[in-house]
Length: 296
Image (cartoon, rainbow, N blue to C red; front, side, top):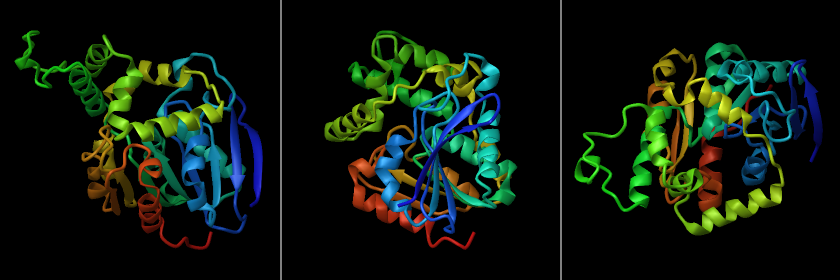
């Protein structure tokens, strides 16, 4: 299969890219989760399902194998990620493409589709993170479960009337006695086997990106942001693939498809990385949402 690896210089930033598949095939760009990280894990997970597309994988700014950036909040905004996406489209001379976003990657995918609808053929999201206050509450309640405490703090000895109303306060409480990874893992992975398989993949990846993107996006107010009010502004439907056992976004992320009129596929027994837990069902669900590509 054709593959061209390139570090694309966009002036202030450099983006690591992998341009794969037939040049004359419909184009598709993959937006990995994070913030930060790289496209490695998602390509390993679903790359075989995308071989009929000209698929662009890339590591988002400041993360993975892309150029490291200084810890300046202005460099790490959703708008900046959207601008990177459009710059890549122009660089690769693609007239229109399908956006495939996973987890956090849903945010730049949705905003790009809102601002550049004329350049978008389809939008497909896998376990999208679009409501970060809700995610903070889910992490908070997961931390209570892990500590053996009732999720309703009114029933605990702390005598608090309700969960912290500020998402950052909820996260501070959630991570006050537990490692963040343990809390996230309890929501993301339905089985220990799936968690161990993903960790094995991460170790094989050997990519140690900076944590700057995550820190700066948090500083810019990520955890206070809910994209739901903007969904009605989208000019095209958004399809969603959801792992039924993904505690970070199920069942609420169904609203993304319902509000926009997009397709919805639920993979039962699958968590945040559905291709690990239910590979065959995930392959079928993804094929149903992507459908036959139109000519570029």
